[in-house]
Length: 121
Image (tube, rainbow, N blue to C red; front, side):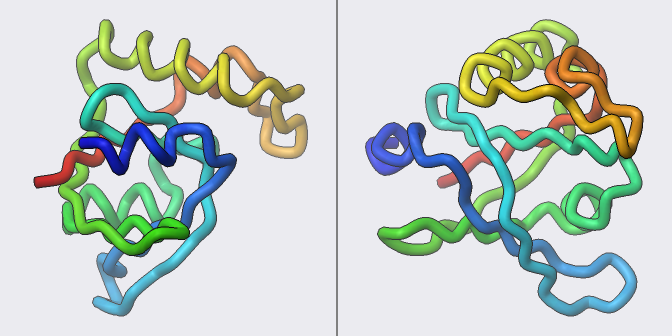
């Protein structure tokens, strides 16, 4: 998808998930990475982060970008090789010191916490 390649270097995007309890839209700003036709997100706050839990409960996600919105389907990244690629991608794009306030190291963010893949039609 050429539109994905064109936005791969943006720092952030917004995503909207559907609240798993409320059923209402839940929009956040988030870091992302692009590999091929897939957009990836890492849940630094772990599996209980609302956006992540919402996406697992209802896989439709709206990705908001400067040129428009795109609807995709989310899936948990469970394959260890894919998770390693996501960590390498995100670690190369975003270099930071981790988040000591939640006990999150940079290495754990890259490779251990949950990741979500979003694919588009």
